[in-house]
Amino acid sequence: MTESSIRQDIIAHAVPLKSSGENVLVKEAEEHQYVLLGELHGETEIPQLLSDLWPRLWKANYRHIAAEVSPWAATHLERPATEDTTPVPGLWTRQQAADMHRVETSQEPVLWGCDIEEMQPGQLIRQMALLNPADAGLRNMQGIIAHGYTRKLAPELLRIAKSDHPEQDALIGGASLWESTLNTLEVESLRSDPHTRYEASNERERVMKELFLRHREHDPQGKILLRFGRNHLHRGLDARGISTLGNFVGEWALAQGQSVVNVGVFAAGGKEHLAGQTFEADERQDELAFALLASLSGSEATLYDLKQLRPTLHAIAEDKRTPLEKNLIYWADSYDYLLCYPSVSPLLDSSADPR
Image 1: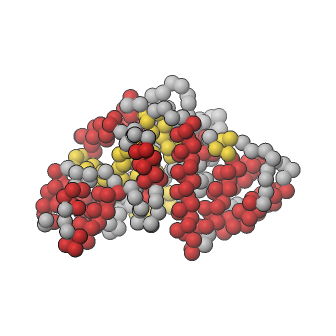
Image 2: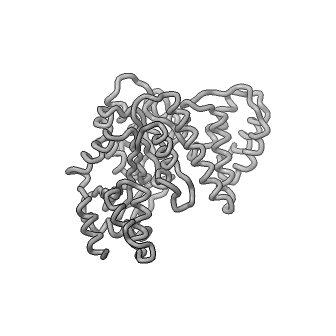
Image 3: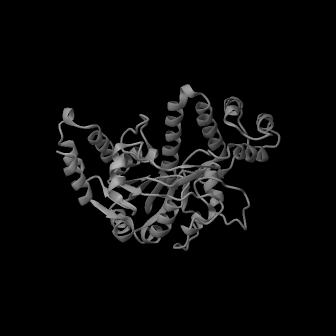
């Protein structure tokens, strides 16, 4: 097989997002019980896509969005700013969360927090201390973060937390606040040492899986959209060697007689904004497959159906595969679809409406 024939095969299974790609995504959502959206972070395009799709997904019986935020953050995001002034910086804004409520009337939470608290670990400690004013360990932890939380403090905070057993806890966002605190400090402590970065990623995926399963067992009805960064929703092992949340959900759904479709998103230009920093979003140099798909997209966001390419790509003898073909196989095995945005725009203000 030549690169030219591969390009033609890819083009035959590509559609512009706006004219027909959104319809393809909705049709897939109707046929499956879980849609896994492996997104970019800190841009306006994914919030806009969700705002466009969610009313149609609601009609297809989607009821919750499992999100890359902590249960604590999800709870605050669900509340309007007029009632809750707690800052919640991160991947979601209150306006984005409010958009997801436009089509439902029950006022049940839409967001499922399925992650550690990455942005504000100190908030969890402070809230636990408020619940347990006489707890010496929590007072000590508050003193350590009195001038602000930084990751280098995590090992000491975790050491104290593991020896403490606060009398009062709270169920926030369907999870124990103290358990969320411990999980967050465990991952942050592993991240603080360059030699345990793999263990940190593995531990974080464990937390995501357990929280997803807890939410699902509590509310087994309806279909679920998962919105996480692309690394978290691969099938199989990702490039880090981690068994991802996406792989877990796919296998778990199969055991329930259900099915999953997963969509990965990448950008070929523009900028993203996250954690106070604006950075280049062009990923063409990162993956040969991305460079090829971007070259075929032109100026329009384009959806590529990779599952149609798997038989053709795997028919190439292993010892005959070019680097491009190997990379295409990796992505076709990891994701059913890839969505290419030729350019993205940074979401500069976490409190702003992304539209």
